[in-house]
Length: 158
Image 1 (cartoon, rainbow, N blue to C red):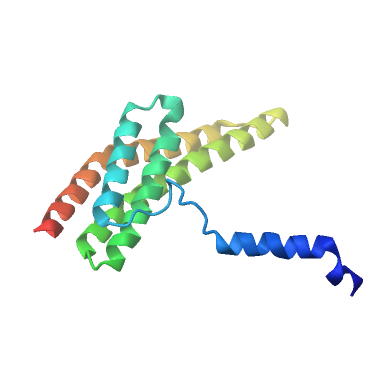
Image 2 (image 1 turned 180 degrees about the vertical axis):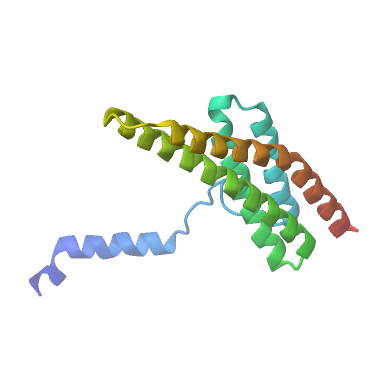
Protein backbone atom coordinates (compact mmCIF):
# COMPACT_ATOMS: atom_id res chain seq x y z
CA UNK A 1 0.00 0.00 0.00
CA UNK A 2 2.85 2.32 0.72
CA UNK A 3 3.99 2.08 -2.89
CA UNK A 4 0.63 3.42 -4.09
CA UNK A 5 1.25 6.65 -2.20
CA UNK A 6 4.85 7.16 -3.28
CA UNK A 7 6.15 9.90 -5.56
CA UNK A 8 7.38 7.25 -7.98
CA UNK A 9 3.86 5.83 -8.37
CA UNK A 10 2.38 9.29 -9.03
CA UNK A 11 5.10 10.03 -11.62
CA UNK A 12 4.19 6.75 -13.31
CA UNK A 13 0.51 7.72 -13.37
CA UNK A 14 1.39 11.14 -14.82
CA UNK A 15 3.52 9.50 -17.50
CA UNK A 16 0.72 7.09 -18.40
CA UNK A 17 -1.77 9.98 -18.61
CA UNK A 18 0.60 11.80 -20.96
CA UNK A 19 0.93 8.74 -23.20
CA UNK A 20 -2.83 8.28 -23.40
CA UNK A 21 -3.48 11.98 -24.04
CA UNK A 22 -1.02 12.21 -26.93
CA UNK A 23 -1.77 9.97 -29.92
CA UNK A 24 1.28 8.34 -31.49
CA UNK A 25 2.78 9.98 -34.53
CA UNK A 26 1.84 8.25 -37.76
CA UNK A 27 4.74 6.36 -39.21
CA UNK A 28 5.31 6.44 -42.98
CA UNK A 29 4.77 2.67 -43.06
CA UNK A 30 1.22 2.88 -41.72
CA UNK A 31 -1.51 1.81 -44.08
CA UNK A 32 -2.48 4.49 -46.60
CA UNK A 33 -6.01 5.86 -46.44
CA UNK A 34 -7.01 5.20 -50.06
CA UNK A 35 -6.70 2.36 -52.52
CA UNK A 36 -4.83 4.66 -54.91
CA UNK A 37 -2.29 5.58 -52.22
CA UNK A 38 -1.78 1.92 -51.31
CA UNK A 39 -1.42 1.05 -55.00
CA UNK A 40 1.18 3.80 -55.50
CA UNK A 41 3.19 2.36 -52.61
CA UNK A 42 3.17 -1.05 -54.31
CA UNK A 43 4.32 0.47 -57.61
CA UNK A 44 7.01 2.54 -55.88
CA UNK A 45 8.31 -0.59 -54.16
CA UNK A 46 8.27 -2.43 -57.50
CA UNK A 47 10.31 0.34 -59.15
CA UNK A 48 12.81 0.23 -56.30
CA UNK A 49 13.05 -3.56 -56.60
CA UNK A 50 13.76 -3.27 -60.31
CA UNK A 51 16.74 -1.03 -59.50
CA UNK A 52 17.93 -3.09 -56.53
CA UNK A 53 21.25 -4.86 -56.57
CA UNK A 54 21.22 -8.63 -56.29
CA UNK A 55 22.09 -8.33 -52.59
CA UNK A 56 19.12 -6.00 -52.01
CA UNK A 57 16.65 -7.83 -54.26
CA UNK A 58 15.12 -10.26 -51.75
CA UNK A 59 14.38 -7.51 -49.23
CA UNK A 60 12.98 -5.30 -52.00
CA UNK A 61 10.64 -8.06 -53.18
CA UNK A 62 9.55 -8.70 -49.60
CA UNK A 63 8.66 -4.98 -49.30
CA UNK A 64 6.43 -5.30 -52.38
CA UNK A 65 4.72 -8.26 -50.73
CA UNK A 66 4.02 -6.35 -47.53
CA UNK A 67 2.65 -3.39 -49.45
CA UNK A 68 0.52 -5.65 -51.65
CA UNK A 69 -0.92 -7.14 -48.47
CA UNK A 70 -1.91 -3.69 -47.24
CA UNK A 71 -3.45 -2.92 -50.62
CA UNK A 72 -5.32 -6.21 -50.56
CA UNK A 73 -6.96 -5.52 -47.22
CA UNK A 74 -7.67 -1.90 -48.12
CA UNK A 75 -9.33 -2.98 -51.39
CA UNK A 76 -11.30 -5.75 -49.70
CA UNK A 77 -12.59 -3.32 -47.09
CA UNK A 78 -13.77 -0.99 -49.85
CA UNK A 79 -15.35 -3.77 -51.96
CA UNK A 80 -12.81 -3.42 -54.77
CA UNK A 81 -12.83 -7.18 -55.26
CA UNK A 82 -10.74 -7.41 -58.44
CA UNK A 83 -8.02 -5.17 -57.00
CA UNK A 84 -8.02 -7.25 -53.80
CA UNK A 85 -7.74 -10.46 -55.84
CA UNK A 86 -4.79 -9.17 -57.86
CA UNK A 87 -3.07 -7.83 -54.75
CA UNK A 88 -3.56 -11.24 -53.14
CA UNK A 89 -2.01 -12.90 -56.21
CA UNK A 90 1.08 -10.70 -55.84
CA UNK A 91 1.19 -11.32 -52.10
CA UNK A 92 1.00 -15.08 -52.66
CA UNK A 93 3.59 -15.03 -55.44
CA UNK A 94 6.06 -13.07 -53.35
CA UNK A 95 5.22 -15.17 -50.30
CA UNK A 96 6.38 -18.19 -52.28
CA UNK A 97 9.52 -16.24 -53.17
CA UNK A 98 10.17 -15.36 -49.52
CA UNK A 99 9.64 -18.99 -48.50
CA UNK A 100 12.28 -19.92 -51.06
CA UNK A 101 14.71 -17.35 -49.64
CA UNK A 102 14.27 -18.75 -46.13
CA UNK A 103 14.49 -22.35 -47.36
CA UNK A 104 17.73 -21.68 -49.21
CA UNK A 105 19.27 -20.09 -46.13
CA UNK A 106 18.25 -23.12 -44.10
CA UNK A 107 19.59 -25.52 -46.73
CA UNK A 108 22.97 -23.77 -46.70
CA UNK A 109 23.16 -24.15 -42.92
CA UNK A 110 22.19 -27.81 -43.13
CA UNK A 111 24.67 -28.48 -45.94
CA UNK A 112 27.46 -26.81 -43.97
CA UNK A 113 26.65 -28.94 -40.93
CA UNK A 114 26.52 -32.10 -43.06
CA UNK A 115 29.82 -31.23 -44.71
CA UNK A 116 31.44 -30.60 -41.32
CA UNK A 117 30.20 -34.03 -40.21
CA UNK A 118 31.73 -35.62 -43.31
CA UNK A 119 28.35 -36.37 -44.88
CA UNK A 120 27.40 -36.12 -48.54
CA UNK A 121 25.85 -32.74 -49.43
CA UNK A 122 24.78 -33.42 -53.02
CA UNK A 123 21.08 -33.66 -52.13
CA UNK A 124 21.23 -30.30 -50.36
CA UNK A 125 22.59 -28.82 -53.57
CA UNK A 126 19.73 -30.29 -55.58
CA UNK A 127 17.16 -28.95 -53.13
CA UNK A 128 18.86 -25.56 -53.12
CA UNK A 129 18.69 -25.39 -56.91
CA UNK A 130 15.00 -26.32 -56.89
CA UNK A 131 14.34 -23.47 -54.49
CA UNK A 132 16.46 -21.08 -56.58
CA UNK A 133 14.48 -22.07 -59.69
CA UNK A 134 11.21 -21.51 -57.83
CA UNK A 135 12.37 -18.03 -56.77
CA UNK A 136 13.38 -17.19 -60.34
CA UNK A 137 9.98 -18.34 -61.59
CA UNK A 138 8.29 -16.10 -59.02
CA UNK A 139 10.39 -13.13 -60.15
CA UNK A 140 9.45 -13.79 -63.79
CA UNK A 141 5.76 -13.81 -62.89
CA UNK A 142 5.89 -10.56 -60.93
CA UNK A 143 5.71 -8.09 -63.82
CA UNK A 144 2.68 -9.79 -65.44
CA UNK A 145 1.01 -9.88 -62.01
CA UNK A 146 1.68 -6.16 -61.55
CA UNK A 147 0.17 -5.48 -64.98
CA UNK A 148 -2.98 -7.38 -63.95
CA UNK A 149 -3.12 -5.25 -60.81
CA UNK A 150 -2.79 -2.11 -62.97
CA UNK A 151 -5.70 -3.28 -65.12
CA UNK A 152 -7.87 -4.10 -62.11
CA UNK A 153 -7.22 -0.64 -60.70
CA UNK A 154 -8.05 1.06 -64.01
CA UNK A 155 -11.30 -0.90 -64.22
CA UNK A 156 -12.17 0.03 -60.64
CA UNK A 157 -11.79 3.72 -61.45
CA UNK A 158 -14.33 3.55 -64.29
